[in-house]
Image (cartoon, rainbow, N blue to C red; front, side):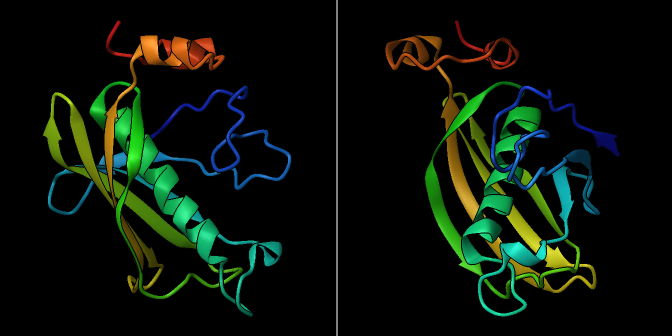
Length: 162
């Protein structure tokens, strides 16, 4: 298991380590029981991250899976990728507030122009909470510059295509 480096200047609500209200998700890489590489996070929803009574907010659960997918694309895909949207989000049971759950993601299909990432979450007892499948394409520097997005240096270094 290897903890993934996340720079303090990362402004992301989901994974930014210093975001004032964010989830502060932390990620690690490891091998799944079948030997395939995956990215994981463990998260305990706080009382103010509630949707229905005692349940983690539905949208924040999606974010947990989406962020894990992003880190899988970046880490396992070897460069910076951008999501083209979810293919399918399938909630099963929402995690409980105050109880840790895990999310994991891996590449399930790959071509030079896209990745398909499948993420899933489960309780500590292994009961499924939900799944997300998404498609990712490489970030192109010219598209970033055309959109006038002020991409920080730590992300610019992850772009695999000039």
